[in-house]
Amino acid sequence: MKGELSDLYQEVVVDHGKRPRNFHKLEGATHKAEGLNPLCGDHLTLYIKLDGDVIQEVSFEGSGCAISKASASVMTGILKGKTKGEAEVLFDRFHAMVTKGPGGGELDLEALGKLAIFSGVWEFPTRVKCASLAWHTLHSALRGEGAPVSTE
Ligand code: ZN
Image (cartoon, rainbow, N blue to C red):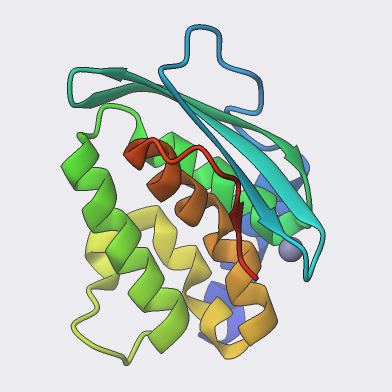
């Protein structure tokens, strides 16, 4: 990504990092998980309210760098109304994008929609953990695993 496009994407990340969406505790959450990225000091708690298989509400709280917050902010915005299965598919796609880069595998940036703003992250291995923290935490919350997730 070069030039204006990359500037725009960076703006979105900074904006979400400063003013994260869905940034609060969720009353009546059915699933919850904690995620830690000791390398950077990112720490977040993710709340999900499931109705059957559908994610009705999702929110998070915590502290961390702009990328970790922006990633959680964009992720929570996208997940509302999705099923658990759809969320797992997005998790796989996101993970492939930030670990293999846009050229790796059968990546469809269009299908990733808003998540594509993180496609430049794969070039910075230490930032990959920041960007994927919220997703690993989601994975754990949906599976109902009680132990905190750590990227280390
Ligand atoms: Zn971070």
